[in-house]
Length: 383
Ligand code: FES
Ligand code: FES
Image (cartoon, rainbow, N blue to C red):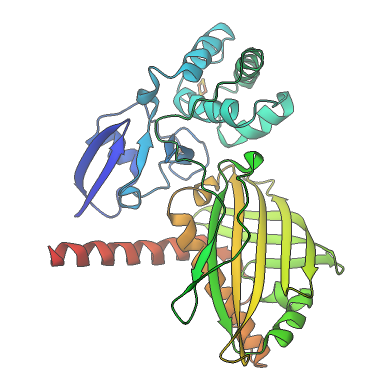
């Protein structure tokens, strides 16, 4: 058993949990909050949607131990929430519920849409709700209810509720440690972009065993870079744009994101930006993202430190991986795999992993969970 301490609907909760306990079971069985429903327990149906640190997430795919220190909001925590009050009334008025099994998850997803997308039209609402399945197939009323709340709130003076667990928007100023122990900004301090509220951001750095000029040229070799990225397959490319596919798997879920990206490079600054978007038709998951990278000499110019800033949003069945602290650890492992492959390629060796194999998120989750449990057990021994 592992000790955890978290906040649920504004109340501090401490518990001992089995590492394998998922958050939905923890909420239902330990906290007695049975408004969180379980449908598929595979991350597909969205019935178990709750807020983690203010962002919607699948509680059936989240281990309770992963939420140590975080704020969780379940449907029971929204009694006094004005957006939820409007949604409850609209769901009732528009006959948006039949058996009601999907309704708690729908309401939490709907509240996120109302907050995040004040201009969402009907097609956009349908896309945003595609990660929440209604087995009674009553989507017309649900979509009408969400649209009616968006419209009604659009006519009110702008007051943006943030929700109990919502974390403040983090300014995108990244500092990563250098080899001499100092810190260097990865990207210029920028005002938080409103359209990117809820995006996941992390910074990472790695060292390649070649000088910056060699690495800069290698980064222009798009097929070589794609071959180093686990799960990536290149379809078309030129100097400024790429199209391709990113395949991921997580237990029973397989997703293949068809996407495209534009590439900008500043030769003088050894700096580049890649902006892209993709969609998986099977799971309805969609992603958008931006990667900024900059090269710095290391070891008197014999090696290169690559400083990365990554921002992305992920919606749909795989949205779990844009939420909570897990995102940074998964990102770090993905970057480490990419760096190992690129170092091998620059040394003329075969890549460590085949890029054509799907990116195994389950492997990352198992490694991440193992690390976390080891840390928790270590902390317990120290006490
Ligand atoms: S029960 Fe979690 S997504 Fe279906
Ligand atoms: S109302 Fe029955 S599952 Fe949606």
